Length: 91
Image (cartoon, rainbow, N blue to C red):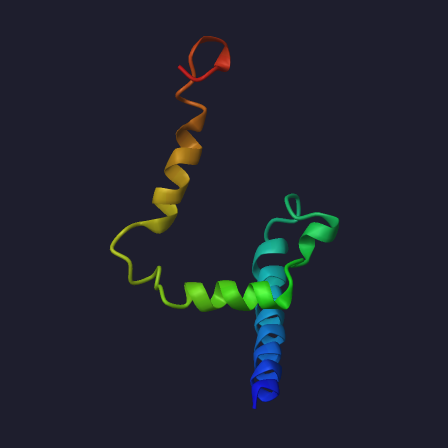
């Protein structure tokens, strides 16, 4: 029985990686070809890692969130260079 679960888990992991890799290639790498160059155009995570990340993230809905998730994530990046003292060092 345990072997059956292991095979089912392995099949899920490979399936999850294939789906995520396709989305990454079609939606991200093609849209940003100057950022994702060479080997970076392919998802290099192991299938079990992708399956774990998917299993953790599927509990959340960013679309149903009352917070502007992209705005919250982008704000510190945008302001990182603005909070610099003389000579470009943090003030």
